[in-house]
Length: 259
Ligand code: HEM
Image (cartoon, rainbow, N blue to C red; front, side):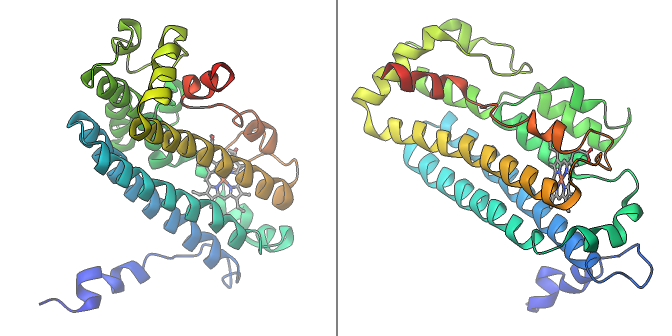
């Protein structure tokens, strides 16, 4: 039997935090640890969302709901973790910021994979990764894959709902566009089928949760670097503001007015 440390590779894990600043600066450890923790959660979220797509393909509503609950709980932890980063003052961050050079969460390929698998496909994101690199190959694969939304629409069709063909046969590599002809179907789900309506509500929770993370991240950025440009090369908070309020599942929001 491997020991706790052997099984979890604790020694290897604890050797992965390598500050770049002279000293090193005290706060760089927090910065590294928090990003690494996020990347681990992104890994787990991808694992769960892939499983969720598989459960939907198997028409397993009960386990889909259970898995979605886990995804949402992880997302809540992800949002809450921003509180920890906000204990770092602008001056503490400046003590090592220049060492980051062009490094930024902007380049997190797992975050982009997560956006892609949920449905926020953006071909421009691929160009940030060198051609021929593993990260670009991963994202290219994700780009060509059906999204969680596609899996959900096929699930509804399998249950006998008259999901319009334009929604079922959409180009899965494209961002999700609203399909007004789908609205009466979703409204029927909400009126007639409490289990599937709960599934829809959890997808809305997921969409809202990701928007909440973006909002908390941009506020943290504003209080830490003000209006300075990002290390990833964008305009910083001004760019991040443009990413707020962009729902992933637009039709689930649109029907609220019609319900
Ligand atoms: C002091 C802490 C942080 C600051 C000042 C900061 C700043 C920024 C800025 C300015 C951007 C815009 C892109 C750029 O030009 O760099 C950005 C993007 C991003 N950051 Fe952070 N960030 C911080 C912490 C984090 C953490 C802990 C994560 C978790 C992984 C993260 C994930 C991301 C992601 C995923 C994006 C891309 C968002 C998008 O394009 O929609 N950031 N960050």
